[in-house]
Amino acid sequence: MSVIIGWDIGGAHLKAARAEQARIVDAVQLPSPLRLGLKAVADAFATAKARLGTGDRHVITMTAELADTFASRREGVESLSALAVRELAPAPLSLYAGRAGFISPQAAASHVEDVASANWFASASLAAKLRGSALFIDMGSTTTDVVPVARDAVAARGYTDAQRLAAGELVYTGLVRSFVMAVAGRAPVAGSWTPLINENFANMADVHRILGTLPEGADQMTTADGRDKTAEASMARLARMVGCDAGDAEPARWAALARWFAEAQIRSVGDAAMLVLSSTEMPAEAPIIGAGIGEAAIREVARRLERAYISFASLLDVTPQARERASHCAPAAALAILANGE
Image (tube, rainbow, N blue to C red; front, side, top):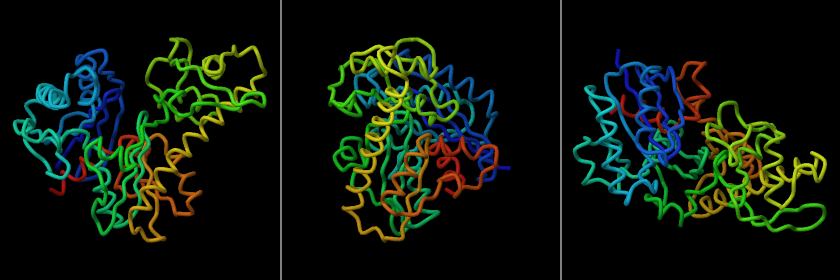
């Protein structure tokens, strides 16, 4: 039996998925904040390996090379590639270089632009292979990918982070880690448009916690103030964004404020989707394929754009108990499946 484990090294989380004969049987997401150093990533590898077991082959993608832990993306790619080799030895290992395919770790230095932040290309490539034409959207904890696929291939205008940002195919908004002040510059409070305080008092995890729309286990980071992960504590953090204490108003006011920020986030993803669709000849019947912890938001974008919605996980051969985790770890799951058919 062929066992392939796909790995996605992010700046805040490590994701991994185990495929047996191209069937996803387990997936895991673990906190690994690079701001604490490479040891955080190494520790996450150890935990994931204990859960997922050994594999005949490991395949690696990454976005963490962009972290300011590294002086450059080149340093990040080379450092993370070396770390993966150390943690996964002696099993065979390949790096995913997106448009260049799978390469050996020794070739990382000559493929930095291909390896850097190529995780989206894995998910979109598999979506193209399985569906043909669609708009693939993956909302994670920090960013959202908006990728057109057409005629069984990725049809994105950009490839690097810089190119994708300019094309609207990479939106720096996520369901958990995005600072509230990065989602909107003002908010309606008691009948007035109130500018936000430009401090990291609250994030989108607080917003979705208040609204009851935060998936279980999605928020793996500490809170902005180090206090509890409760709706009441989130209301206190959110109230500070408009210069208030939670006790200054009834909970309904802070719930309404949370709804405003959730709406602003959905609009930003919807705007990006409309921009990307305007640059392609996507058939009207082409669906939106959604992945990540923000699937509920993507489903709402699909409804507003009057397009059919398909969950990425529903396209995969995956055990029922791993279905949701496979969606949350879409690049890792896609890698494990793509490598099996290489």
